[in-house]
Length: 275
Length: 274
Image (cartoon, rainbow over all chains, first blue to last red):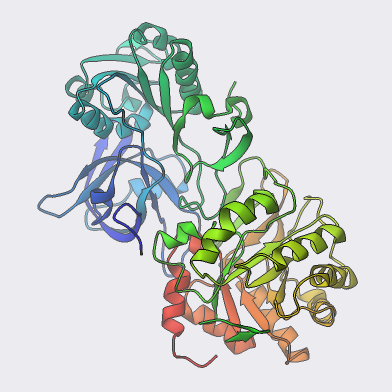
């Protein structure tokens, strides 16, 4: 039998679609997924027509929020950047549309047992996955600092929410339209003082910078690695993630099943194509 | 539902490479309901697999080059098979090798491992993986013979061929004479990734090809048990393969979309004559 932690394959209903800068924010009634959610997990979404199925690969999205109880029952939230066929299709959904979803999938962020000083680093839409994490860290009396980055204002997510979620917030944008001009790698050294654990979401480049900064400062890092996934459920081995295991042996694991959250010092960044 | 000396609860199997280690399907309560579970292809030595991208979408299909990523036989036997055995899952271990000697080793060691229901020989992994070349029917037959050599006689060997109707009857006959208990039609069709790497094409796009293969082989070799696979996503798709002459089906790509597909089709076919 599956347990209360196992993912579910469900039919969800789109309740609200909001535009936030370059992104769409979807609230979806998805019974079972919200209750099982832990920060860092994601859903795999079927796109296009289902009878017959026209698009066979699924699309994975971070769950950026859950409400286990509400007038529409349990809901989950996703932030979608319309980029390819799948994300554009999902971004175009309207209230009342139905979606086939599987989740929550993947290994979540590991939460500290002690109240420690945490830095949460988020780039672009992926920053959305950090807000439910911040809430749970604060509930454990952790100190939460945030660093958010994006190329420009329309791609910056959560700068206002961050003021509520974190004790201190730094923002960097590539064009300087919000916060300071710069990128995450450049801003990291100034916010690492006293940090014991760094949690990060974003591009592979940003995650690598986080892993390196954490190692330099003697902190732990937990990075949520985003890769294209054909299934998201660990069945197809289509999302290889090169790592070094606990035993020191290099191997390739599934980003969806052994990740997406993994210790930054375990990832073989060069083999992931990140310098 | 009999295959050699083995009885399966129903005619729906998972297809190799689409069912993970079994645990992932069990998370959805979708493992115990299938007639048999087929592992991804296991090689003697571990293989890291291909560089990404490994899977791309094409109309009604997936083009993929996983590169036979697997932990190797030793790790499979210690880390994956015992879980399946403890669960009493009917397990066919898919095998691939670079030499006839490797195939013989795989058969010998798997044959004496508790929990192995049978062996599926992967005769059609397309591309440049350094596998023993089985495009000639007599070479395919030699692989089946090699796997059979040290295998206990009661353990079924099934062999999976690419869905290329051109020489399919000839190949099926050769491997049946070499000792295959059933033939699986068919594997991924040879294809190319957009970046030029050899790959396989799976999904509903190849269903008519696989159906044609089942039809043609069944017409010539009506006594040879056939397992149909290729883009089956509904019970009706499965029925089409059974009507063409297959006695069982495998569900592959559809599992990636909905991990409960095989269990659902098995339930829908329950009670129907096959």
